[in-house]
Length: 309
Image 1: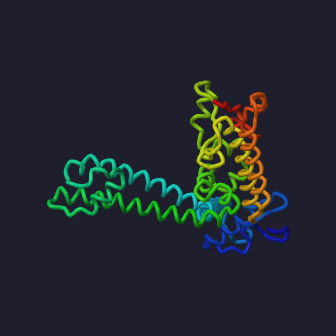
Image 2: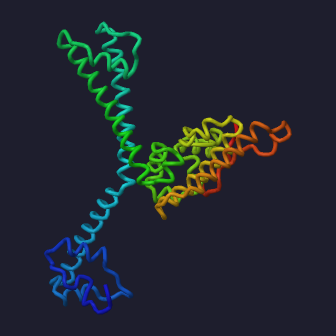
């Protein structure tokens, strides 16, 4: 809105809710003015009470549309797909456990199969009566959920590199999506310090440590990354800190620049090579030099010192 406008809703049809919401989203002013009086003078409202009623309706519509737009964002769709994948896997496994108890005694099937493999065997069984029919139907539901989980995983693996190319390359598509999910979005992840990224997914253990009930965690979900999981236990703190630092940088590049940068990936590979080379060649005296335990630089709870136990 400019100083020449008669009112915040100047030129807006009082019955056009979409136009009023657009005025809320796009309007601006250099200084406060008597908006109710200007709205009445411009014909947007008959009096001040009606102005505030229409203002309330317009702001609610604008907020609702903003929420819908945020929910349609690519990173939010990735989060929904990942959580749906986890839900499908959890539910399929629960159904498979129930099926083993039920159909294991009811049907004459391969006793060596377990879990979802057992469900697949039962799903292929030809039922002889109504009871077996229900067990076979349950098995088919479990198999369908397993297939849906696989399809969702394929979607996540395909979509994550489009949403966060550097993060997906560095962490792998599924771990990248999980970090975005735990943070609540790519923008939120990009704003987190490396120390917080390091312990995402280990909140329960971290809070237990802060209450004095447990040692501090060295890592959260990034433990699934080969750079952490594949490093000897004494050096996992250093590996987790190095990986978290680069993941935080990758998230910032993806959110603010949206372009792949080879240098950050090369830096991480060099750092991990140094950590592993030191682990292979260090002497007994050198082991006292770096316990690799503290969390990468950050703020708040995530800055707690990390044990190497």
